[in-house]
Length: 212
Ligand code: SIN
Ligand code: FE2
Image (cartoon, rainbow, N blue to C red; front, top):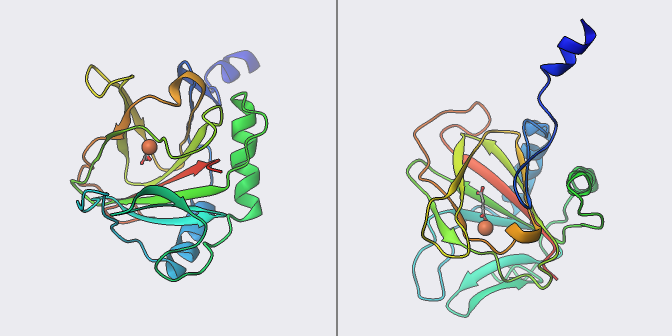
């Protein structure tokens, strides 16, 4: 009896492709949402522009020792918020513990994020295929947490084309991409019209990185 019961329990972590680890319903959404609210009270979501002057459709905010930033001067990490001149808010220690611990389960033993970019997707907004390459050490993974409306995360390959691996991400899911997956093109499909009690019609994603 006992065995039947346990056989039906989904594994905590699944490796979907080399270096891609999915933890379904892993985090307490309210805990992460409280952090998002307090960070974005201080640094409201805003649309940055690409070095070429195009508006970035996904709105962003940051916490950590440094924050990812983009404007006419290029993509980079900034040690303080260029708009206010102030430091970015700290990543709370209870959030660090959850992220570091998940990374350890996936085999990344000394991951401690120094930056977290918070993305906000509105209906019909997508994130085009890109590689995160402004960080110094590519042996460090990226740990992503999703909140609110579900979306399809896509991992392409070493180029933008080809058939992607489609990973539906729901509120509370945690995804790690590291190792051989760290330098692959990835993106997020256009957000469907949906509703979630935590975020209304939006999706929020937090990507924890070791940038410096
Ligand atoms: C990213 O690739 O930077 C964000 C991923 C996501 O929103 O799930
Ligand atoms: Fe990315």
